[in-house]
Image (cartoon, rainbow, N blue to C red):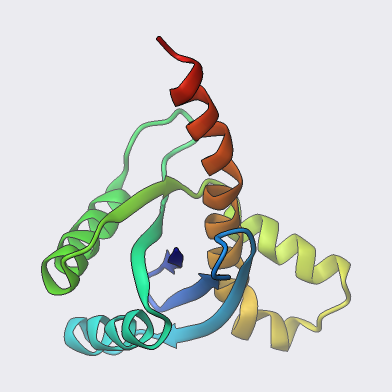
Length: 146
């Protein structure tokens, strides 16, 4: 099953895709936000190109677990995606995903100028990989719970 991962931001959207086995995520694009229709069309293009069955979108909860203004923006965008694509849109806590991506890029020696171009794509990859890694564990819990 192919799953698309998104790191939704006010200026850019990071995009990642998993392999056919649903085991590994890789970043594929950073979309510079234009307008709602262009953003939705670009994501629909990835869905069609890769045969995506569901989308995981980063959900920016606050440190205390509550929802803030950015969660409202993600929810609106996710509802529009669901309406346009008729597929599940899964919200996944993305707390610190961008910070983790920035730190990883800094540690690997990527210059600051280049980091901006790839940080959102890497954050989408981190969000999607976290979702993929949790799947077997969630399935195992379902089987063992009476």
